[in-house]
Image (cartoon, rainbow, N blue to C red):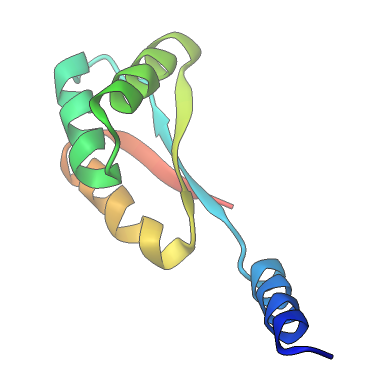
Length: 92
């Protein structure tokens, strides 16, 4: 087996083992669009356009997945959303 094949096999193995989680943001009647957008930019590193689109989806659909990734990366981000008064949870 070549070195390239070994590395590719290792990457495939690591990819299968890592489970992706999602931060789901829920609609509320308290927070303004501006507050939600600013918080998504700060907590989830969204672009202004991404944050605006997510806030619109949350408003009309009731919820939206705002970030996907490994649990250790999502936990502090979700905490920032909660600390800012938004309603969110990590699902997986």
